[in-house]
Image 1 (cartoon, rainbow, N blue to C red):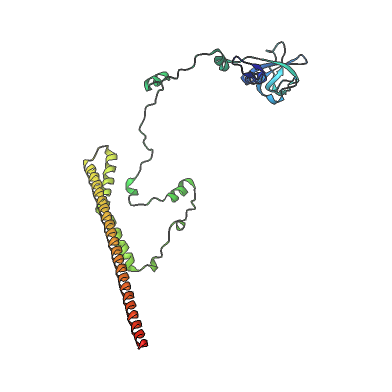
Image 2 (image 1 turned 180 degrees about the vertical axis):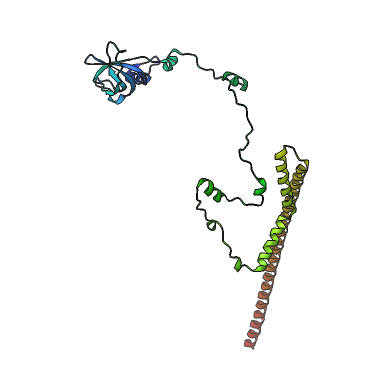
Length: 302
């Protein structure tokens, strides 16, 4: 322990330990030469060390890869080395050289600027990339659109034919099967009428026209003004319907609240009337009892 300039105590042993760990860490991945106690030397790539083994005059154990015995003519020694662990009691020092990745940090080399850059500056600092010319894709096979009209696409059948994938999908697990023989005829007729009303409604026809016009637009690339007006008209109609529904809901809520208040008022008035009648009945009974008691008392005296 020693004092610093501010009068505080400094643990020099801890500082020395941190410096040792930092120096050993800087050697990771570098070519080093390890001087052994028997006078020979090893060369290899420094892979790691164990600081917990350091102490009692012993240096930390180290690990080398591609290690081999150093000779006078290292160029002639082209044999591949092997991984090795050198105990701290077997060597006296390690000699190595830190490469640029740490050298720049030690020498305080200039770092890339972190100031704000515009998009043009960022693009200018990067190498230009040549983009290939985009070519329109055209299918080799000709599609027969007329043959597909009115047919239903079965994805499970397509997967089975083209890819050999058999699906285990069971529709009965997700839907409720209906036995039409148990459903009355008038119910089925009513269901068909509802279906016709839905499919024949103005909205359904408008959407169908819109889809057809959008398909025509995709084919020739032009904007159909009739389709635009149709969409605007349909959206306006939906907005009006929604506002009408909101007003009806508000009116229903208000009417329900008014009726509920009226019912509560009637119940309260009825209860008050019952209380008045009960009180009046009790008063009459009390007067009758008093009159009967007075008559009996008078008869007893006579």
